Image (cartoon, rainbow, N blue to C red):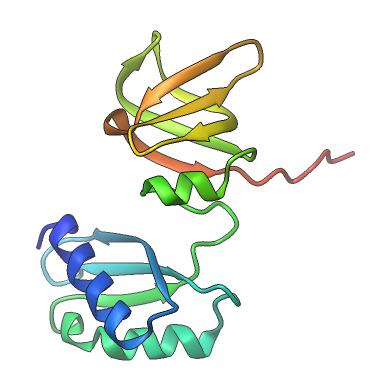
Length: 148
């Protein structure tokens, strides 16, 4: 089972049955006999246990070969699509790239802007432009504040 195909299948199933629910991310892990399909969903009014249960029941067909887990994306939400990035403009994010961009592969900074093709991040002393095709993984960064 390929992640991109599974993502598209699940996204369509959720859109048809729970139109306000967004498939944020999924992860498939484990080996034969103990594979786990983790599905992360979001909703404008938040994600509760009842919504996770409804989504889980829609994904029953996957439970033949996987343990299916459905949950909210949490406070550090994965960013996949251009619209995910645009929604968090001005916020702190972490981006890991497939290869070096301006000599590095791991960036944490404030998202200045996002288009369909690239991101602009404000780092401590500079701005960096990262092509979306180079983004391996990105997420929001929750600031827990100073602990004294």
